[in-house]
Length: 338
Image 1 (cartoon, one colour):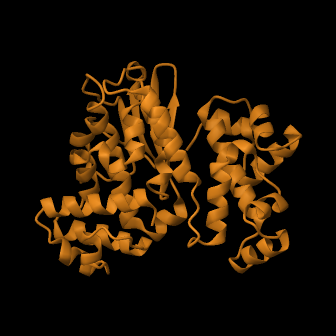
Image 2 (cartoon, rainbow, N blue to C red):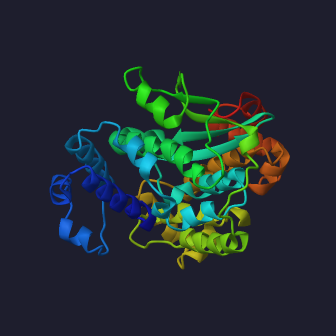
């Protein structure tokens, strides 16, 4: 498990203790060695164990909205470098944009996008459908935590009590009053998405703790962590990590990626086939993710996105994007994300 994700496990255990839950019992029920966790030794924790940890913590604390309440109480320090980057951003808009950029260091269950409009800006969370279905408990708590965290931690960065204009969630009416209290919005709209909409005046609200020189150092450090590749991961995951971290250099050929992994193209392709995937499939999945990211950022015209992703012809990019998403880049932009 990555260091930032492991930090969340420690934060969850610490919060459970405050709710009078025995950490020893919680770890035992979740298949974890409490003594190893307590010493903060290097430990490998599986996604299933994390899912069980959230499930048991919620049950033992008698709090079905444990993630929401942890997000309300959690501090930026729990995010490590990512939290420091947010804290040293110059404005709320910059802080949220940086948080979205580095969220994948904390969780791979969902992504976060920040989109500025004429009179408001929207923070949306996009589930990884397969992982959300595989680990529904941790997904629900982590996305609740993120919603509450965005609301309450930004308060500590600015001289204002921020409230959203709108909140959109796919939850039922029984739970809604607590979400309305914590997310400071009533009524909460029900739809199949996770979104917080804020008045645009907050976008340029200065952050009182900002130290932009320090932020630059932290960004370099976080990027170095993102670039690090864990040899224990499956090869396909290491390649995806490498491609995302070096996306600004373009997507390399099979021969190019093999050279970066100190192997031959044939050997690399054979190992990937053993994991049930081809390099072309990995490269296309990254191109799709980057294409959607660049288009949703609103900073790049379609032609420039095509060029960034290594397509010599706009028509080739359009065909690929339609194969990935079922629609063209232009239609996708008109429809908006989600």
